[in-house]
Length: 93
Length: 461
Image (cartoon, rainbow over all chains, first blue to last red; front, side):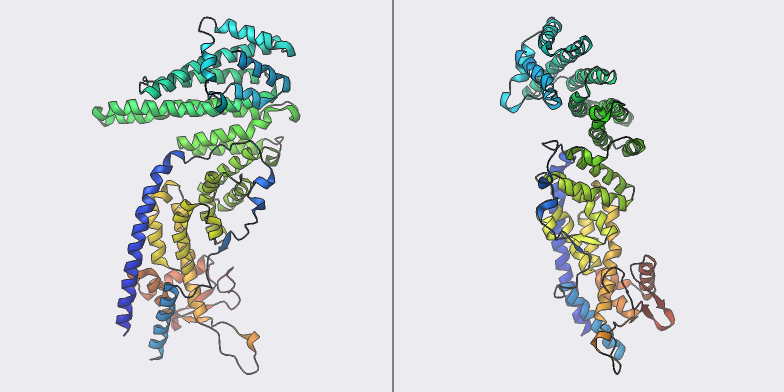
């Protein structure tokens, strides 16, 4: 039973990592066009008021904690729960 | 010619430094594309000296000193010559008939003008308010140097193809000749500004940060970042320099960005975060590319200093940053070690190029911390004893190592299958050592005993 569960989990992983490779190719293409203008640009004006800065944007939620307690339904968390359950069962058994 | 000197008179009369600088621009204004050409055609090599002398004298309704008048005379003659070189090089480029070393000639001509401007500022003949002329000269000195170097590399590159590797060494030595030369001139400009002793209302010290920023850009291009540290040091040592917040925001933001990146590369992440955060906050709203550059360093920085990740709110306006950081951030949050490694590998080229790879790699600890934290949360609570209420609930703090081991094996994917329990203990010991986790390992019982008050510092549990 546990063997089949592991089998299924490793196939999903394979799919995930394929998708990652696809992303990688896309990422690799982009730098070439960016290489030339990788420099901090001159601003079009010398000075500006505080209204023209990032400060008043009202966009407050910019950073979040690195852990995530909310989303327990994503694949990985579900798998983790399964694994922990199995360990617990083994111990009892 | 008339037009140029009409503007010259106006700028002098108003004491308008930026107006004056605009007259000496090597790029024609958008609304008058033929201006450089017309200026150049209005005289010739024999007459330019006399023409300019007459025009400057005629401009002198506002009473320039004889020294200043003759100094402007020199500058405009030099400018006229530089314009000639620029027009020739641009024409050569457009027609595909660029001569060898043509951009180097532009560089040399522009450098002559730049040296004159430096000279007359050093000797106080030019007023301090005309310092934007130095900014302009310095800005384009760097640009022309880069063009000259890239043209000479192309020429030399063709030669080296046949000549074997010995010449290769030679050509790599000479490949930044002009830019290194430009750095020396920019350094003189910087020292001249920093060391000006005039009263502050009328001081060239206001040019300090602009010229420092030009040097930073140049050093980064030359891969000589250690030179930038000297610049920062001499600014810090100059006690009578006005504080940075009194300077124009463009000077502030650029300076903070470079100091931020330099301290980032020195792994002084607290300083780096401070500088980059300020650069980010003050950055002009519409300068998307600069914001993106700031965040490229601020995001890895905050991952280490504050253990925080960018939200989609923050990343939404920057598709490139999103594709760069979102996959990593998602895996860090999940505690997905294999995914983290894959995302790091996928972006490796880009991360290495931006010099953020090694910093991001340290995010693996945070990923592991989050994974172990999930195990702790999944452990639930100790059963309540008699008389205790819900408020007395405490989490189960004794966790069998096999639970952590199972989680790490899952988190590491295929690589994790080989992991033995000693290795798992070692990883946990590391987490405890790095203060990402509080507790101890009770080996004889194969348990990890976690601190009841804050097992994972700073994460709410």
